[in-house]
Image (tube, rainbow, N blue to C red):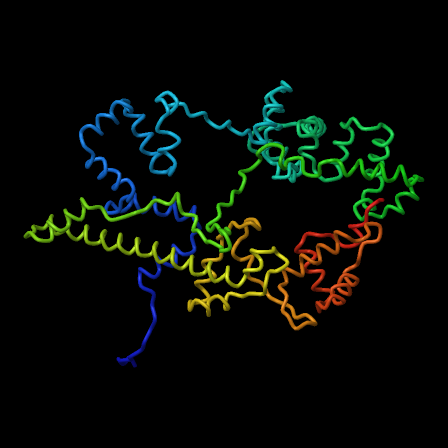
Length: 484
């Protein structure tokens, strides 16, 4: 049986302003700049403050001043170019005002970077292949990964061509074409394995013929032992001297294991733009929010006057709709400006707290990084942990110690014999130092590394050493062994 009942309950919900603030808070500098530009396009009530102030200053200039400007920048395009540069360049008056109009118009373009695919396709054209083989070559090039390896099986590519393009190529013909592509620049491209890549490069190298022969034979017959650095076993099986073994291994190590990486711009380079700049001025550390390129937004006076006049007069239906639209846009603009300002204050507050706690890091480097968690900063600045998490994620700081993500400064700690907590990042740095200075003929095992750190007063287990070593991308002892 259905029944009605009343219930009183308290719930907590975020207001639209709070949701907008949280979204803006997690954006980095570049993303926020794009978000502001999008908001400027969507909300007509918002406008760039710098543009407005410059327009007002232009109106206040006397006639003589206007005549001077018109004489110097008679062309309309030059005037727009000069104004845009003035808005974005603080040193405009000193560096650009005395240049001639011809100099202002000349803007050399940066050369376009050729992609790896374009570079290989251009070489493919030079082979003067028939149409079917050329299409196959394009398919091979199109299936390369970022390191330059062909990860798909050649028969699979041939089956797809036959099914969808009705092109039938004999397997041996396809294999011959692949061998020719592997000799393109960079050598070893389109290889199907590291072993094949190294052998192709060795065959095309101009090194000593005898060492080249030994290196190719070592890879063909003893590749598994070579990857596991079992040099004593290889030496015995190939009946080599210490000198020839050392020369052969060194020759193989000079080959490029990733022919597609770094030669041509195979993919867009990731660029980090720091959100904060921390620098030492005299004896004090100064934090600067890196937002000089950020558009400064304000509410349009023109729309404000329109809104106020519409508010004071009696309105018909159309005017009421206009008034409602303007009121909504004004509210949205005020919230947006307030959220940006609040975001700026929050970011600076968190960065100051990080600087105070990690003062010695900025003074002396990573070895002096202290253990710190989100809760420490949250309690200090009286904010929620989720707010700290949003701020540090994807934000970077530039300092004399380099560019670091804010996450870098947060780490767990381990106790030492002295009773002091040491950051696990400091332990990783120390582990890296020990490995760098170990005997390369007899590298330390993880057990031995744990013993050495324990002897320094850092209590750490072998499995933790193994975890930190893997985070540092350092191989196990057997793979670190080198020929001396």
